[in-house]
Structure formats: C-alpha cells, structure tokens
Length: 161
Image (cartoon, rainbow, N blue to C red; front, side):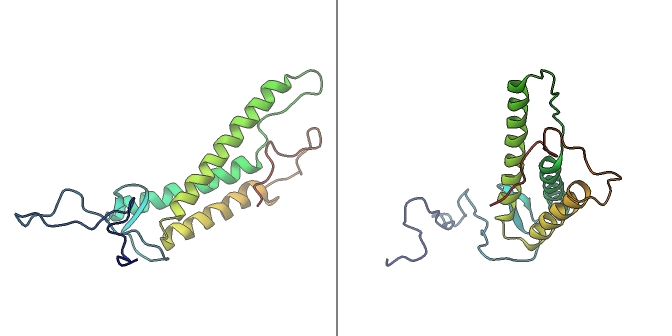
C-alpha cells in the first residue's frame, strides 16, 4: 500500500522514464481520463486515435453517431419475414442470430467509445440513439403501423436491461 500510484503493481503501466542519456523511452503514455472531460484530446476505441487531431476527433464523433443509429435500426427493423407456408425456420433463426450478434457488437463498440469519458462522445452517442429511435422506432415517419408477422413487428427484441 505504500505505492498508491500503481507503478510497481502487476498489470499497471509505469510513467515514462529517462534513460542515462536523458531521452524519454519509446513508450510514451497518454493519460486515460476516469471522469467526464471536454476536449479533442481523447482516446476512442483504438490506441492513439484520434489523438490531438481535430479532424480525426470529428471523424470519431461521426463514427459513434452512425454506430448508435445502426444499433437503433437493427433494434427496430424487420428484414427477415417468415411465410406461414413452409419457410425454413432454421435459416430464419440463424439469420436472426446473426443480426442480433451484429447489433450487440455495434452496441458494445458504442459503449467502449463512451468509456473514453469524453463529453462529446457521450453527447453524439445519445443523440445518435435518439435520432435512430426517431427514424426507426417511433411512428413519426410511418404512414401505417407495421403489419405484425406472426405476432411480431421486429426481428429482434428491444435491448432492455
């Protein structure tokens, strides 16, 4: 308990150290935030990305926004229709499983991006889910309510806790 910074603890990285020549070692570490912060200097999904480049930061925000919209689309779409007259239930079940896997994977990517604790990422993720729900989950843009297929209106159950 003497070293509270974790420099000597297994699995924890130490800060960069100076060599005998005074140069920093090859492994420079960028600080990981553990509280919400504003700014473009963030690590989102990949090491060193977007870094301090404003263009890459904006691209990362657009990516998170689009991922959140895709999660909502997959949560409310009805791509796989089963005919009552002898459709292959195994194939339909496997396709639904594949769609569920893709939806959950995209949702986890959004969650991992949120773990950057960047307020901009948080805002675009929430906005992306809201826009996705408005477009695909609400009835605002639908002229007629969907016709249930075998009592269902979507391929996938809604993501609930």
